[in-house]
Image (cartoon, rainbow, N blue to C red; front, side, top):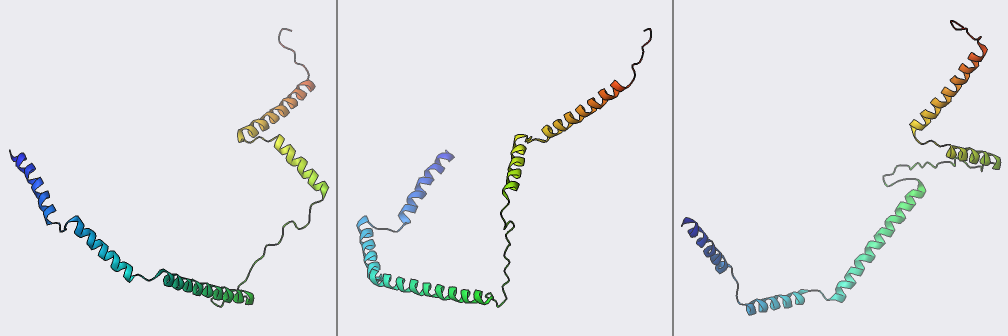
Length: 157
């Protein structure tokens, strides 16, 4: 029973709130809206006047920007910035002003082409290759040493 009483109270509260909200009929609202809209239109500035005022403001802004740009250009020509400090510029020199000789270019291209052909992009590949070369050198030295050394006789031979 107590739950039913609570449920019954909720709709009553909603009805109260709706009754408290001010408002009239639909026709009255439309009339008020139309009156407010007419007053707003009467207060509003005509479009032509607004456009001419906006154009004047834009022209004044552009004139100020042009004057500022001219002032900055004049300061730049004198070598002084806005605060009065002397501006020091640094210009990079061309690194390779002279073109390379064709022979040097051919050598470089050949070296680069060989590097691309033999390119091992991973460290383990380079390491394996180096170890294989070292192993080959050591095997060659060992074989040379063995061929020079006298043959040993074994037991019972």
